[in-house]
Length: 218
Image (cartoon, one colour):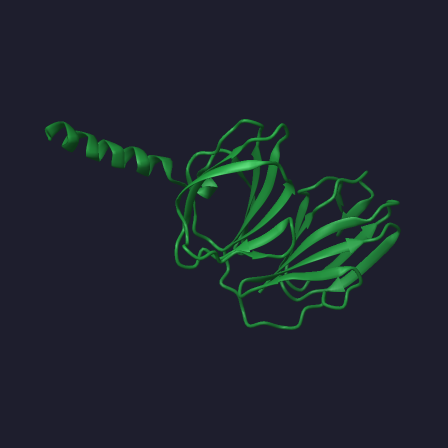
């Protein structure tokens, strides 16, 4: 009995140490953060495993290199709150229960995903300038944000006047002839944050279509 009592606090301590906030997990790299969003760039090599970590902030997940993965879950909501915009982009609110888990890569190539935590609670909804943009598709519309996928043909330019803060993420590898507000987009995961009220100038001077995720923050 005495031995069991000694082991009990040790086990609690070990479990607590393993459940780090997702932003502190070593394979989740904080590449951008401001008052609206925190962008975690996640690269899991073949055969590697993350530490146990906790998701508790509303998040958009963008899978940029899908592979076969596995996970071990300690805690999550009994009924999923995930909204799947398409095969690559989804949203989870973690409204009632955090998810505590670890993830491993069972495949032969790197697992690459972006975890974009939404730090703002959101403002009253207003009409979006992207609803009538050619090639745009509304994927997710929830309190903190709207997510659009924009597919832009080669040789095209786009100018949009937007009143909301906006995070734009590249979904396609390219030769570097794609830009947003003069920032080059040449690979998956390239991103730019547009301050509210600033115009958005998108240019695709390549010969191929290019896809973006537009996160319009409310």
